[in-house]
Image (tube, rainbow, N blue to C red):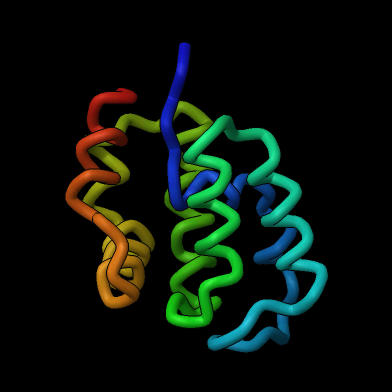
Length: 114
């Protein structure tokens, strides 16, 4: 079963969110490396897009962390119908849209994955 998680898939490891003191704007080096490592589990253009977002300075770290939270729920088996309206998902969506990512296409793929 192929699940195209696109931009947010690199947030699979919740450890990046466990630090109590972190920047709202930029990732610490450990968070960045963890996210890039997770990108490696994706295929083709999804992997390239994932890596691009991790290093995109137009997507602040706080938006990336929100994506982590939403995608972790999806990967744990939560239904898209439930996850799509959570604050973390809405924040992730806003951050990606502000940075110019094709949010409608991404959401369409996510809806198809469930």
